[in-house]
Amino acid sequence: MDREIFISEVKRLNIDLTEEMLQQLEKYYELLVEWNEKINLTAITDKNDVYLKHFYDSLTLCKIIDLNDVDSLCDIGTGAGFPGIVLKICFPHLKLTLVDALNKRINFLKLVCDDLGLSDVECIHARAEEYALKNRDLFDVVTARAVAPLNILLEYSIPLVKKNKYFIALKGNEEVSESKNALKVLNCKVVDENKFLLPLENSNRTIIKIQKLGNISGKYPRRFAEIKKKPL
Ligand code: SAM
Image (tube, rainbow, N blue to C red; front, side, top):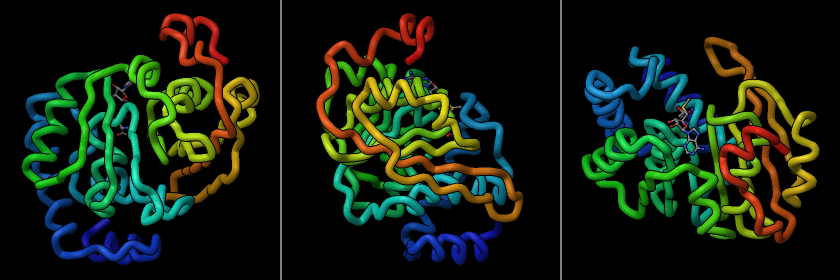
């Protein structure tokens, strides 16, 4: 996806990119490729591919929620910063929290925030389920892309979400039918689903918006070993 197509496709998501945002994305791309030589961040390094499969793909979250109305957002299993950093660049008002289990990726994200001048970003080195135990009911939106199956992601993320607010999963294919029990136990429901094809390469995408309906038992999230052994 070249620059011109990127700008026009992002406009169709109702996002007007400023020159500063475009420069920040460009700098982010350069840092990603530079640091990818030293630490494993992504298998995708061709510039047009990064703009399509990382930058544009991250912004598709805006198909299902208007981030202008969102104050705090947490991206769990953010890796090299997708979708969190891209969303922060395009919606600078967001109070962003990035969580990842790998410290080298968290250190990369701190460097990106410094170099791009992004403020109000917390980079947390933790497993999501451990972070969620101590940070309940905190965020307007929690999101994740390519981290775990939906039923497991729900256990990591729903404790972090404020009552009546949302967890938004960026997925390849739909998995809602396998997550009915997790939705029930964690007192939440699917309120919207958007299926589409990624432009140019036409691969399947599903964005699932899940609302937290109320309090959930303090025993969730369980420890990873238990989640893995007996997923909801
Ligand atoms: N979200 C990014 C993306 O879409 O490019 C990264 C995806 S990468 C395949 C999965 C990331 O999730 C890795 O960086 C891994 O360390 C992190 N991860 C997996 N399970 C996690 C957990 N329970 N808590 C925190 N991070 C986790």
